[in-house]
Length: 323
Image (tube, rainbow, N blue to C red; front, side):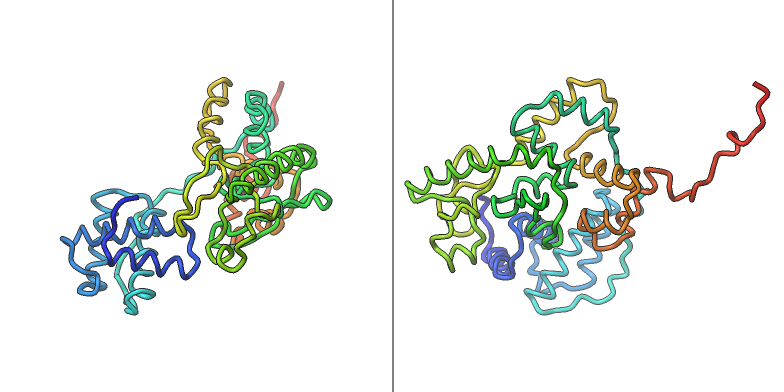
């Protein structure tokens, strides 16, 4: 791990106490450090609105970062000042970089079948869960045994984007395969327990229930092949499978097909939403399954379908053709 200054270490500690994820912590620390370096290592306490606006403008005009990247940088600096330094930022007079709306890539059912046919065993099941339940790859890999309800055909996503929990559907096809992987994960947990090792746990839970690592409920369904030290506590534990393993497997599978589209793990989540709407499911249901705060976010999938045109037919198809 890169060496941090005492100040950045204090910011990281504050984030951990507030329950922020490791991923968010790393992103925020990166942007706070970039902000400090941009202003020649001045301490943030000596800076305020003007310096923040200058930094964000630099990102937009010189580094041409995407609007979502600007938002993360702004959120990081807002956290720094409001939570750590107890100073509220005023009106920055800053505008996000303009971004042309991009429609998500959506696969046809035939495309999805082609890709799945190139995958096998665990990797195939993970991609099936992404498509069958509308999961992000990080959400899928973080699934623990307790998150699966095989009787109700549902699964629970814990600490998803926005630090929210939600429930979504589980396909019968995936439900039929999961017991095998649950049993394998539990067997690995029992073996680890003999050596005093278990699955990585939320920091607060590990302190409150020191024996929780022995409970099957907390085991990851898709565990990592190796053990590692917990980034917060230093405890030797077994984390879940790394996202890069699935991304590499997916890239290899797509290369074996003739699909001329850019396919990522998120493509299966987009396809899940689009195909549900195509099948006549209402947009509020899809919004809930995806975990979107605002229905406007889910609305993008109606643009993929062309439903936002309210059934408008091309005038070309209304001409009276002689043939």
